[in-house]
Length: 101
Length: 173
Image (cartoon, rainbow over all chains, first blue to last red; front, side, top):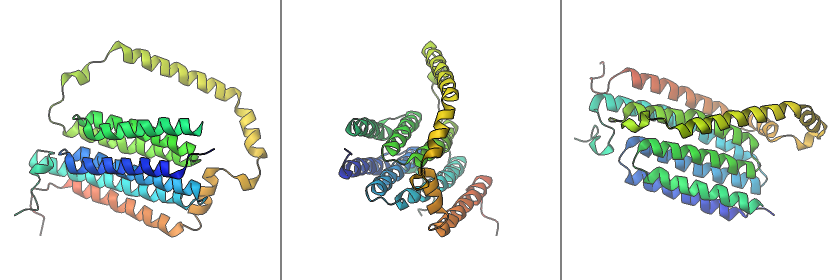
């Protein structure tokens, strides 16, 4: 007796939508990066669920690549945030207008 | 039984995912994301991905979230004084956790021989999750694995360069 796969898909879709809403709604750039992690975790759950139900370990391998992207994102993203905070003294995305003219 | 575990993990994951977005304080958002990472790891165990369980705990809950908490503490302008107040209850909880770790370590030392015997007697076709992932990762997915290492190298160099120079100063021409 195992849980059907669409339960996992619904959970993952809910997590992804929550992260997406967070990215669009929140104004703190660190919380936006946290919401991106939330979305990456939702895709990871999808990968692992399909790897279990299709009996193919390739899905679990791809979680590693998602993990790599997440680690790179947190490294570069927080470096950018620290650099912006040093030059503009804020972490509110409304006040980031470096690329506007 | 599987439904019970799935229901518990899914419920906590959904609740903490909403809390990450809804809570005003970034520290609380990061801490609820920590709880979510733990329960996603539990979900991996129910999906027979034991190695990813360990990786999730070490990389996400261990490394990435510490980065975020560091950034939150570093960049948030005003920290309320209640962060510096420690209640007596935390001492109680910490003591209980230490006792639990000691008990678990003692039990593990007693039953260690039997677990080794059991894993050694299993046939190689029923190799563990870690071994199967290792086989697949270093044969079929060797090239993407190397590309992933390149991504990490680029991220490392990029974060060093970004944190060394100030954005407001003009780039050297």
